[in-house]
Length: 191
Image (cartoon, rainbow, N blue to C red):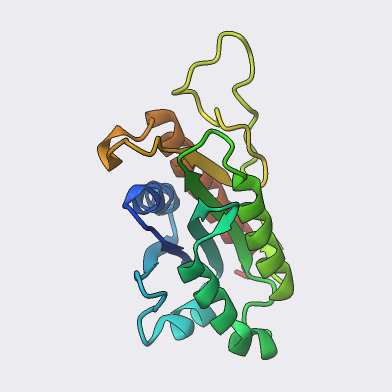
C-alpha cells in the first residue's frame, strides 16, 4: 500500500476544506492510503507526526497565504523538519503543495515556492498540477484551475466568505490535484 500524507495549517477553515478536497482526490486512487495531519493554531503537530511522515511515500503541504507566504504555524513545522532533513528521511518522496488566500492573486505563488524550496531541501520530487488553465473569455469562476497555477493547487476565498461558500471549481481543482499526486506517487514507488 502506498501512503500519502496531507499536512496543513488552516487559520479560518478554508484551507482545511481545501485539504479535505485534496485528500478526497488522493483517496480515489486505488492502492493509496491517505490521511492528513493538521498543524494546530499554535503551530504544533501530533507527537508521532514525524514518524508518520517518515513512513509516507508522498507528502502534500498546505497553508493559507498570509502576507505573501505560508502561515507562521506552517513555518514552525517546516523549521522543525530540520531533524528529518539532517537524516534525509524524506529523500525521493513525492512532494506537492496547495494554498488559499482571500485575494485572487494574494502572492499565493510565493507560498507554493516556499513549499518547493522546502521539498528541494529535503531532496524530494515535486509534482505540479498538470492542469491547463481556464483562461479563455468563456471561462467562469467555477472552472477547473481558474487560478491558473501549474506549481500547485490554488484557491481563493473572499475574506467575508464562509467555508461553505468556497468556489466549487477551486475544490474540484484540489481534488483532481490530489488524485494526480497520488497516481504519480503510486507509479514511482518500488513494486
